[in-house]
Image (cartoon, helix red, strand yellow):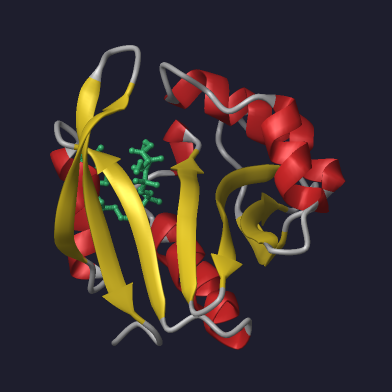
Length: 160
Ligand SMILES: CC(C)(COP(=O)(O)OP(=O)(O)OC[C@H]1O[C@@H](n2cnc3c(N)ncnc32)[C@H](O)[C@@H]1OP(=O)(O)O)[C@@H](O)C(=O)NCCC(=O)NCCS
């Protein structure tokens, strides 16, 4: 029987990101967010010594999810996280956050921060389960549509 080409293939590995992931990340980004990161934003972060990221990749090497950000002194920022829609709800997002948090700790961070749209309650619950708590609210942090952000943070290493 012929395999259904539209069926998502299995995840082969979680690995640090690199230039070869730019096409996949930009595509997922455009499909996921109203104000997607640009290729230049990703490239700047890849080439910055404080920047790092993790991807979930299929057997053919293509990334289907990513968690990226940076460390500054003893604080880390998870700046961007997404999983391609057909791969959601399989635990990939949680592994990406944990992988990112582990590397942040190795790089000297003791606390991990992120921002999330006030309306994105699903993501807030997802982060809550990973040990993040709300630490503040940033007015009109997002554009398109304009919206406040909740700032969330967790101590490193993440519990659990
Ligand atoms: C957030 C995200 C990365 C989670 O990835 P994932 O691989 O599906 O994560 P997991 O499988 O580990 O966990 C999924 C859980 O999070 C919940 N969840 C996460 N985001 C959600 C959302 N926007 N709406 C509803 N539920 C959401 C799922 O319902 C699921 O809950 P369950 O375990 O009780 O069923 C993914 O949903 C995504 O890319 N969302 C769009 C982009 C986004 O919102 N990014 C975060 C911005 S700060």
